[in-house]
Image (cartoon, rainbow, N blue to C red):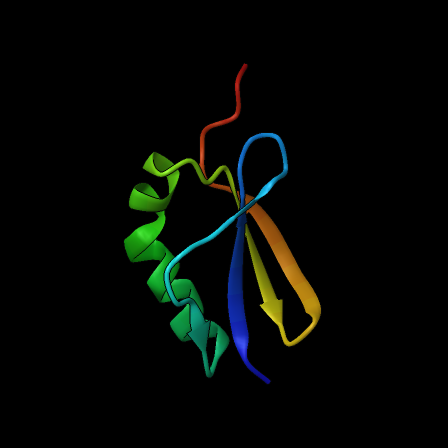
Length: 66
């Protein structure tokens, strides 16, 4: 399976991102660890890690409002 990241803005709309396809989960997570700030500055609010068609998890790229 291929591991991929998909991104959404604060309204839940899909955001196009650079190539984010990986052969394993560790590489995908490492890449996001290096790129998340730039992605957030570009308008991404949520990152979604997928393994093939299955969603592994979703995570916020911006701090939650209190």
